[in-house]
Length: 107
Length: 191
Image (tube, rainbow over all chains, first blue to last red; front, top):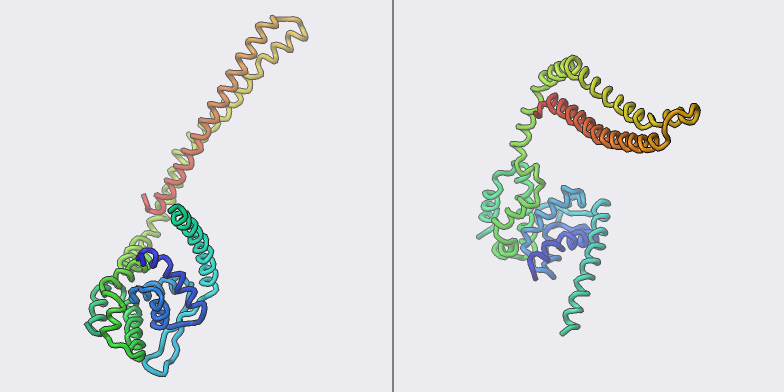
């Protein structure tokens, strides 16, 4: 898939996944790369920015194996932002769909 | 490449960040390696999934807010600019107030008064023929057509004057604003 596409929607996907349930970085990376192939290393810079912008916050929780895990949770501000991005995405993808239909209809 | 090499290379790309931030970032990746390990993945697999350290470092720099990219330099230079200048700023403010009171206020007031009185002139020019008509009506002195044309003439003249004055007025206000702004800048030491 086109790298620019992925970069743009990654933020929205991350927000929606965290909204489903609080997740730690590795878990989130697995959930995303199941469906979209990304360089998982680029997830952490994004998470740091989302945290700095107060769209999500973090807390540490013990794990049975290994060190404590840093969980990411969506803040109220993050929910508002997510809903805004969803609306934008719907509008955007709807428009692209229309154009794509015209292309395949014309052939 | 194993975990330690990966983290070392990442660190070498991010050495310009402040130490605490760098520590936090590296911790995230370390945790990622640990969690992958308990998931049964080899370090090499994780390295491949994460992507090249140089790419990751690039992403980190892009996502970082602008001010913390060179946080060390910016905070010191700001402090140098602000703190020792308070005394200087107060002195400049006092000096400017005196200069303005003595040199600037007089001429500016004069210009504004002349400007306002010009409106008076324009209004009297506009109304002057009215008195001619009153005279004509009361005493029968004067010629109606001469009065008519002279009143058209003076009314247009007055209108032109008012239009010109409005234009000049805007310019005066603009100049005053600029001057006040300049004063503020000088006091702040930005000029």
